[in-house]
Amino acid sequence: MTARFSLAGRTIIVTGANTGIGQGIAVAIARAGGSVLGVGRSSMEETERLVAAEGARFTALTCDLADAAGARTMFDAAWEAHGPIDGLVNNAGIIRRADAVDFTEADWDEVMDVNLKTLFMLSQAFGRKLIAESRRGKIVNIASMLSFQGGIRVASYTASKHGVLGVTRLLACEWASRGINVNAVAPGYIETNNTDALRKDPDRSTAILARIPAGRWGRPEDIGDAAVFLLAPASDYMHGAVVPVDGGWLAR
Ligand code: NAP
Image (tube, rainbow, N blue to C red; front, side, top):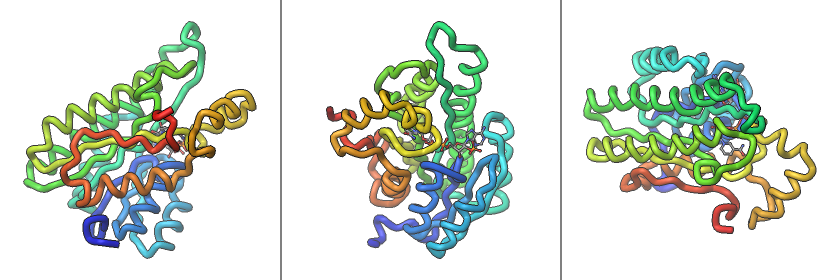
């Protein structure tokens, strides 16, 4: 790996690292030579094992990201114990499905809190540290096809993921001159718990697959490699970009 694409000597915090895309990102960071601080509420043992197999260091940090204030406290403690931190991947996210006419306030609030509010509060906590210490840093937010499209039956998810793009662009504008890169990856349809219901619905899964030019669902490692690029020196001049990793879904 050339130095421009290496994460050697870098410490990256990844939210929701126990499974799915977050696990794929953690393993990809490890392959690129970085150390991973994995944040979540569930056991990270599997990810720790996969990262260790790549010869990298993994530290699990327990935090319920539904509580934005608790997430900020966790971040500050992580900086003290394991910092300085070079990159933040805001990956953790949830989805709730119901027709718009039936959508509950709880399903709206829970999704907005985890997917958007905590993403902003963690980014703010990271940005404050970097700016106070005049350090460079990288933020990678995990967006979605529903950052661009409406979808159906996922009102709060679509709102939150449109918001992720807006916040990505806002932070990029405010912090680019400080040497902080804020960008996003927009995954297409990836095989994880998040899409379990879709993949089990024969009509929806056939329709989705038929529309993906690559002819397959994405895998967590597809997203991990894109995240590594946005965390590495190779992307130093990228600010406020959103990189679709979607098998061609948006190009269709
Ligand atoms: P996933 O397998 O369901 O993983 C979601 C992750 O977020 C898990 O690690 C989960 O932890 C964590 N999380 C959720 N709520 C949390 C909370 N309150 N506190 C701490 N951790 C919490 O789904 P995924 O597909 O990998 O999703 C990862 C990201 O990619 C999400 O932002 C999602 O919106 C986005 N995305 C996914 C797809 C796709 O096709 N799969 C497409 C576009 C975007 P637990 O295991 O403890 O719940």
